[in-house]
Each structure stands twice: as structure tokens, then as C-alpha cells.
Image (tube, rainbow, N blue to C red; front, side, top):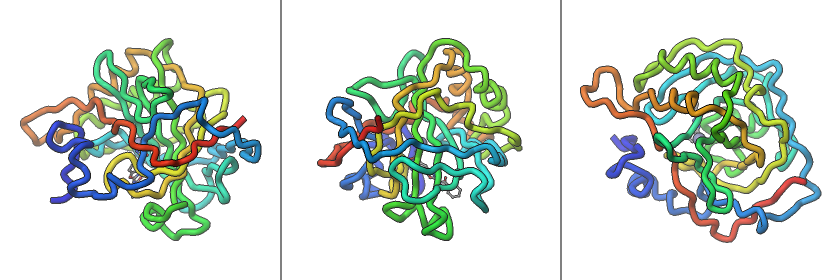
Amino acid sequence: TGNQWGYGKEDGPSAWHRSYPVAKGSRQSPIDIIPEQAFHDNSLGPIIANYDHCTSINISNNGHSVVVEFVDSDNRSVIQGGPLDNPYRLKQFHFHWGGKGCDGSEHTVAGYSYASELHLVHWNAVKYKTFAEAATAPDGLAVLGIFLKTGDDHRWLHTITDALYMVKYKGSVTDFRGFNPKCLLPSSLHYWTYLGSLTTPPLHESVVWIVLKQPIVVSDKQMGKFRTLLFTGEEEEERIRMENNFRPPQPLQGRKVRSSN
Ligand SMILES: NS(=O)(=O)c1ccc2oc(NC(=O)c3ccccc3)nc2c1
Ligand SMILES: [Zn+2]
């Protein structure tokens, strides 16, 4: 079926354009962010993440990443401000990472990659009725990107890494209640923002990207636990370790990257 895409040699990012021609579009993500070339826009207010009443539901392995999903039937957890004209509802978050000893962020900063990148995916429920509808609209989604670099243990990431053994195989899902992702935010919410796309198929050009400048710090050991996940399902005889699930930077195509103060 057309949905067979991955991160391998045959089905990886360089092949996605065959089933998803928008891969060669004019506002693809991720990109290499060059801080000196970003435009300091004083009209850009602060990002406000109101996650205090969020309701996490489950954690799952979708064969591409590990995903934590949230109740999005009302405005209990939203992001607003910054470049956004409306509040956007939190739908899910997931990660992208590298292999042992090599980096795996999607966005890069002046060519520098981080160990991993966390994406908090939100949708514009003011203008669109469903996530699916928003996912195909030019202002439908807002993804908050947070870099992870290695160093000390991250005290709250344990809640996630301790649950990964339960979602080792593609297609596995387990309850994951009471998790508030505000504990994964860095102390500074300064950001870069630009118009882009989903970084995996279907690659819809529907994302207002908000990439935080300050990374969070996690330990090598915690990153290692992400690499115990598999791209493959329990019933498949071939076991392929889930790693390097990142798309490389795409052409800027004349887009402006703006910077908050
Ligand atoms: N790496 S990314 O650009 O953040 C990115 C890429 C591809 C994505 O597909 C979805 N779909 C849902 O979340 C969803 C969740 C529930 C129901 C339908 C869709 N979110 C994405 C985020
Ligand atoms: Zn992502």
C-alpha cells in the first residue's frame, strides 16, 4: 500500500517524493536554521503553553516514533501567542532521534544537529472541525519543536523512558495517564518560527513551526532507551531497531525565519 514509508535506504526520505510529491514542495520541513539570518520581529509576542489541564491518554509505537496522545475535544490544553492568531489544541507529542553516538534532530542550527527533537503537535480547532481537516490547511497545525542534548539525567523524562518497554513493537499501545508535557519545556521559551510542513508523510504544508532556542538536557542512558524501540511489529521475524527516524533539512526556498526576542 502507498503508506509503506520509513527511514531505510529504499523507503527513506529521499524516496518519499514518489508517493508524496509534495516532498519537493515550497514549504517543506525541517530546515537548517541560521540564527544570524533570522529576522528579529518585535511584534512576535511570547509563546504561551497552557497545559495545566491536559489529559494524556496513551503512549504508542506507530512504527515511526513513540507517540503520547491527548484528549483534544475541548481547549483544555492549548498553545497560543507568538505567531499564532488562535489557540491551537495539543493533540500528541513524539520524538525523533539518532543512532548510538550520532545525532538525530530534524531541525539543525547553523548546521549543528542535536541528539533528538521533541515535537508537540497542535491543531487550529477555531478554524477547523477536525485534526485531519486542519492537517491539510496552510494554518492548520502548530508544532512546538524542542531540542534534546545529552548531559545529566532529565528527571521527568524517566516517566516516558520507563514506559517504552511496553511499546517496544510497532502497533503496540498502552495507557499513559496523568502526564503533563510542561515538565519537558526548557526554562526559556525564546523561539524561531517559520511556515513549513509535516516532517513525515503525508508531508502536508500545514505547519506553523515554533522551534525553541534552548535545548533540554537528557542523559545518554535515557536516549539509549528510545533505541530499544523497534520499527517492526511483534509478529515480524526481522527486528529493526528504531533509530535515525529523522528527515534531513529541506530547501528554504526563500522563506523567512523570524526570531522572538
Ligand atoms: N514530525 S511532525 O511534523 O511533527 C508530524 C508528522 C506527521 C504527523 O501526523 C500526525 N498525525 C496525528 O498526530 C494524528 C493523530 C490522531 C489522529 C489523526 C492524526 N501528526 C504528525 C506530526
Ligand atoms: Zn515530528
